[in-house]
Length: 173
Image (cartoon, rainbow, N blue to C red):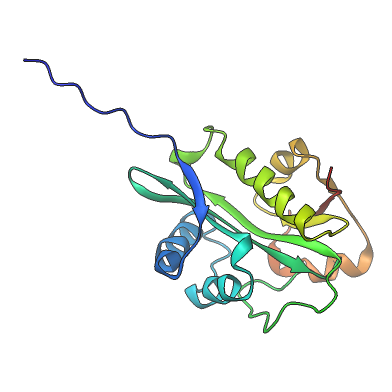
């Protein structure tokens, strides 16, 4: 008698919870080995702004995440550093990280996350979204409407992000 295996379900984005912190930190270490951030940093971002923290889940468990929050334009937070608090008058929606394991790439999950983050920025009525593209990810972000912003003081702030780091900005539609 033939058996019919249930096809794997499509990965789904859902809100991050405290229970996801260790999986998110492990994904971050896998995807960004040169830029590790401690689980405490992920936990702080989740506590400060849960609406900007997502996990991509498949039948195999967590395979990606996004961390974002309102922030100050042209002042990207240092890597692996606590924020303490969000600014009282933010002027950008900052995408701190979008990381996908190789099994999640090419599924459309990255683009779906970007759309969710754009919607969140619009709900906050912020005039733009910003991020630091690392590890050759600038072309991905450019496909989603982000453009490189350059200025000399900003270059100093990007040093901890690596030589190919690019500060990128997008106006919400």
